[in-house]
Image (cartoon, rainbow, N blue to C red):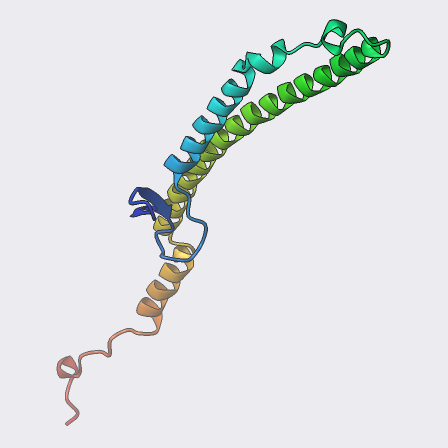
Length: 153
């Protein structure tokens, strides 16, 4: 991978070969993870909703007030617990983003190392070397020097 300049001017990872592929701006993804964690904290810290309550006296003392209060209490509990679930989802998503960036960077480093090792390997060189040496010794021998042979009469 090669560092390049992304759309916002920050570093972006692209393939060294110049091939078109996925471009990952690690800083932007990690920024999104931080933002998501902050949103989760904000959701958890909003105590205004959790303090809401309804009493029968607020409804003018009607006979059905107790039923309305009970329904409100149930609905309020459902919404509050759903918000807790949303917070948990946001925290989990933030963690996944952070893990994904770390995993992709580790995979890039592993791939780059593997490609470097592969580039240094000469596959099949023993056979090629043996063939070349044998041809040199047995087939491509230089002709004997005719100047040293005895002259015929």
